[in-house]
Structure formats: structure tokens, C-alpha cells
Image (cartoon, rainbow, N blue to C red; front, side):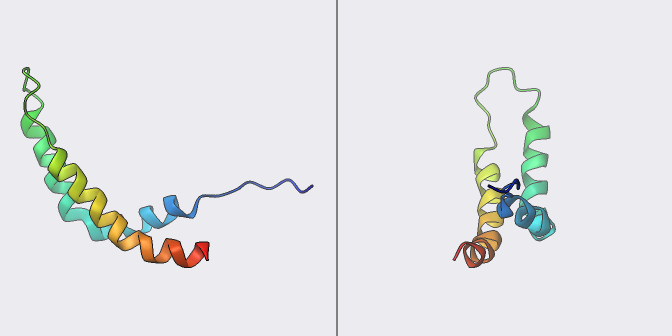
Length: 69
């Protein structure tokens, strides 16, 4: 049995595509900054959060599945 570490390629791919998703990330960060003083808990940035991850998934998925085949 060989000793080797299994590496998840998704993390590296996400890191390489983060610059392409800067706009949704900045929108999420701006929203988070706007609502940080909300004490009621009724405000949220779920839409911006999912927009950011959708952007990353859009770019990462094709490359990731090429590596998994």
C-alpha cells in the first residue's frame, strides 16, 4: 500500500476561477457590510451568496468533470 494524500481538485479550480467571479463576490461583501448592523436578523444576503457560488460552479464544473472522467 502506498502512502499518498488524496487531493480534491475542486479547491484548486475554485481558487483559479475566483477572479472571474469578483463582481458577485463584491456584491455579496457589500451586502454583508450593509446589513451587519441589523439586530433583527430579518435582513440577509442569501441571493448574493448564491450568485457568487453559482458563478464559481459555472466555471469550475466543466474542468472538474474533465478531471473526474
